[in-house]
Length: 320
Ligand SMILES: Nc1ncnc2c1ncn2[C@@H]1O[C@H](COP(=O)(O)OP(=O)(O)OP(=O)(O)O)[C@@H](O)[C@H]1O
Ligand SMILES: [Mg+2]
Image 1 (cartoon, rainbow, N blue to C red):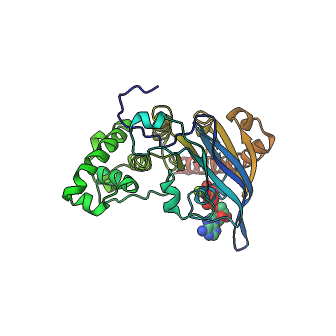
Image 2 (cartoon, rainbow, N blue to C red):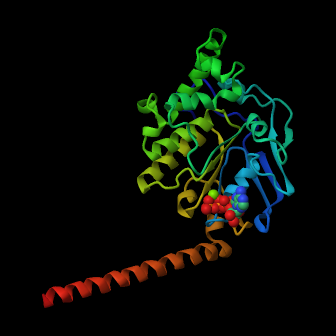
């Protein structure tokens, strides 16, 4: 399916498509009295874009934080399935699926160990080094695969040099895929918000993930930027064949690009299925319509006030 001649595989998983990649099994997470997640189960399938949607405070980020090891649920288990193989990078390695499937329990692992297993993520708020260039930020995404330290690589010390060139090639492919050529040497802090979010996606991709977790990659974007971002996520999925868990607030945005959708509301799972199944689910319609009706009521009230102000102004104009 690849349209461009990429030398490296950006996909770190060796599981055949259609097999369970990640299993979230009855997890619950509490913060004091707040139940952020209640008995959540879901399965992410290799090769899917799996969306997690829900209103503010539904527990979406908490779920992602449990998967990536930042939070540890008090109950339940999270398991990742991998097939051993070289994650070093050449395309033919990634297509080889000979080994046995191994199951890793992530629930109490430290975040860096989960990242080493191939789970990469982006954050709801941009977490980039703004004083560094795009290229430098992307190279940092490779550090997990570097035998020589990041520091010696950056200082361009002798033995690190060959390794750096190898990693550089992979980073170049990410730059190409996400069309970041024009900004490669710009400081991240100077870039438009939408481009920064794309750099964050790129940095996660540089890890050659088995699973890519994206927390609201389109938050705060205008319609055009959202469309662009959705296109890049689809490229990552279709061209690089990376499995993606995508958190989004806006149901319409995910419906077009997801294979499967899980809906959370107040920490509980209220629906799970294909986009069409979820769209038709009464519980989802209620959760979303409730929010929409509230928005509509506010819009109507504002419109009414604006109309009154306009009438008053017109009257005063007549008098004066
Ligand atoms: N570190 C924390 N300490 C205390 N409470 C937390 C913490 N993280 C999340 N929560 C609470 O857990 C609940 C779920 O929050 P979470 O951030 O997971 O929701 P979300 O679905 O990502 O919302 P949003 O759409 O606003 O990003 C909220 O009530 C939140 O206040
Ligand atoms: Mg969130």
